[in-house]
Image (cartoon, rainbow, N blue to C red; front, side, top):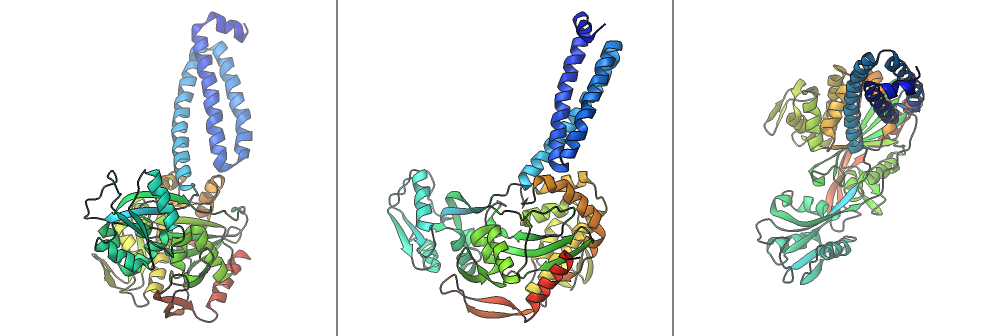
Length: 473
């Protein structure tokens, strides 16, 4: 009896065949999704296997229809589990792999004012800094999109005058751009507690294109960027670069190098056409601007970046169940006490460990050392359970607070590489930069007199040589 005749004579055979057809489609879908992360070789190998299993089940359907049905039900349950896993992986990969960066422009009012978005603005004055590129145009666009008109859009010569007029209610609205926020952080560190957002809009910045290599075979450098609260809760928005670390990896020699770049380093910022602090480069132009500034200062090439914010760091450490870090000093920061040597930290305490600096002997340089110690502590904890499932669980916790421009098809290779290099990653040396702080006026922001970090003679060459030594094996 051929299969067609068998189907005509048995309703059960029709059910099993329909189920088998659906399973073949689902199996191909799962395989295609998995191949995005592991490579096309998986798809090419899986297709013949799927067709062979299908043929065997058809043969079983003819000989033992009920047995075929039982086998297909079991197979369907397996495929459902696989679909759930694939969906989870795609969701996490899509969240952390979104490579867009934005400047968030806001129209704000005093927090204790009665002004609300739904009322008439015809009697209100909106202030903006006239040296802030695009502030007038962008705020005007936001008002038009929300069908609002103000009595006057008033230019100010400096941000401090604008802010004081807002506080005294001489101006009812203020335009906040990344440039204005950087000014306000110097004028009043608590300015965000005194304002409320009426309208905001995201303006897309330049994509951060990876300088792609085969990470399983070729050495590369990753820029680890930690954004502070100035970026708000949105990981895709620009923010001050509080953590700036270069991680250089050679998959062939299994060598790694971790180099911290102080956030106050005086660097050229191409998007502004002048020099200022490295932390402001990311604030004004996003991750690409920070990369451009570091590459220009140290003459190194950065292949990829990974960006995390404060919320992400807390969730990462908590998802791992806490980590052990090595403190270089005994000190108190906020409500937390640290002793010289090993300290077990949960998420919030880990964040304080990474942020504290004013009470440490070398301030920013000491903090840089501790930030690298925290990264090593994270690798040590991950080494206790270095599975792909554990990796996905951690990334799931980070999905709204972590982004990278590493291509999705390299995610699994990155996981394999981390597992392969865990001994080196747990014990790599911390490299900082010795230098001095100098006070002078900023080249980008007129009238701002601040301190900047200058590496000592030969320090930039040392950084470059350490990185090249790993790249060249």
